[in-house]
Image (tube, rainbow, N blue to C red; front, top):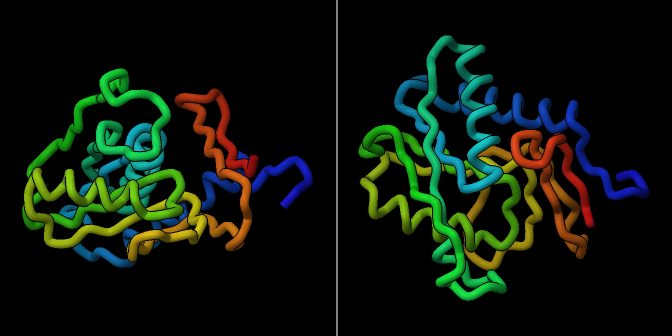
Amino acid sequence: MSDDGLLLDAVHMQRALERIAHEIIERHHEIAAVVLVGIRSRGVHLARRIASKVTELTSSELQVGSIDITAYRDDVEQPRERIEVTATEIPLPIDERVVVLVDDVISTGRTVRVALDVLGGLGRPRAVQVAALVDRGDREVPIKADFVGYNVARGEQRRVHVHVRELDGADEVRLQ
């Protein structure tokens, strides 16, 4: 890690996402049965990039959806009635499909746990897997990422901030 907290620059971030795409392809011979569901907001953009790479490598277009868990968060500072909730959008039924939840950072596992609850109300997937660009490793619930782009050393107390060009104008991951 450099002194300025940079973990991944744009090039290394793209490589990590490409590695995740390759791992998804390797694990799923029936790639058409896979749907990527990004956890808003950065997870959605990362899911789209992973899907694009999978399509480039396999000529099979993956469907990408999104889940908004904002209303279920227990760690927000503002009152729930002020939280803007964006609709969850899943492009097709998830029954009997493999759903890969995509998020920028997995740490405690609580975000994924809530996303699993939301998915449960939308159908019954054959399997649910988790892809995270960065894994902090500080779990509070027994949830594991199946696909990881970068692991942060345990015990690192600073926060991980993922910036994506679609929202932030640049791609990078920093410890702050």
